[in-house]
Length: 87
Image 1 (cartoon, rainbow, N blue to C red):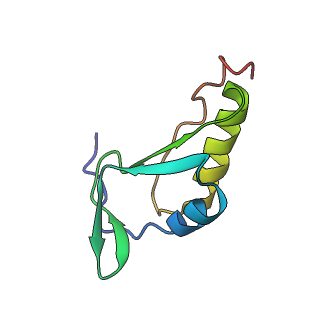
Image 2: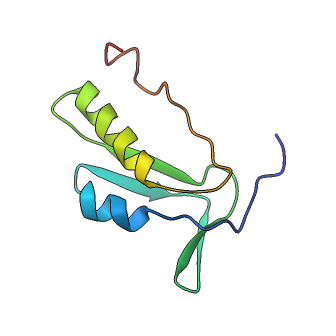
């Protein structure tokens, strides 16, 4: 893979905490804090996880939370649990 981008601000994390918790939450991996901001530090930066009454509901919550996060140059999968959730 190419050299990962680093130092990009990650926005929307507070929105996830305010609007989606406790049913969805963000796990940090390749992040760092600097001057009150959360920045990318390379590699797999974040993981968004959610719970729900069933797999389809949990999947929808996770992708809704993911949609609140903004990180220039980021990529994410769109097929996680799709088949198992009947989609």
